[in-house]
Structure formats: C-alpha cells, structure tokens
Image (cartoon, rainbow, N blue to C red):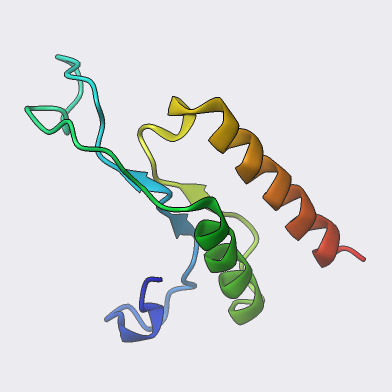
Amino acid sequence: MPTYHASLHKNHVYGKLIFTGRGCPYQCAYCAPSPGKHKVRLRSIPLVLSEIKLNLNNNSDLNYIINMDDTFTLNRERIEEFCKGMKEIRYDLFK
C-alpha cells in the first residue's frame, strides 16, 4: 500500500490515483513507456480494492478515483473482479 501520509504534498486529497499494475507486454511505436520493457506486474484486485476503501475512509472529500494503469483492460476476468468489487464498495457507501 502506498504511504500517503509520507507525501510532501500535505494539502492534497490523497487516494485519487490508483495503480492496479505496471508495465506493458507490447512495443507500440506511439507509446512512451514501451521501449524494451515487457514485464507486467499486476497488483491483486483484493489489495487494490482495500486501498480504495482505505482512501475513501480517510478522505471524506474524495469523490473520484483515477486508474493509472496502461494495461487495465489486458485481462477480462480481472476487470470483472475489479468491477464487482467496486460495485460492492459503492453499495456499502450508500447504504
């Protein structure tokens, strides 16, 4: 989990940017991060969802989340697991 409390940006609402994975298996000529790096490191969806829950609990002003993952749609089952988890989080927020 990121250590948001250790950030130098104390006046910023943390938790808006979520990384679900890093890297890309492709070498697209138009993409800046692709030169030679093929290793993809994916975070577990339960860990990503727990980070989102933590950020929602710690930041009452948080009203959106940005997924910063170039390969988020690489695996359909992973997306479905993420969406199911987000649906549950949203349901818990608006009970």
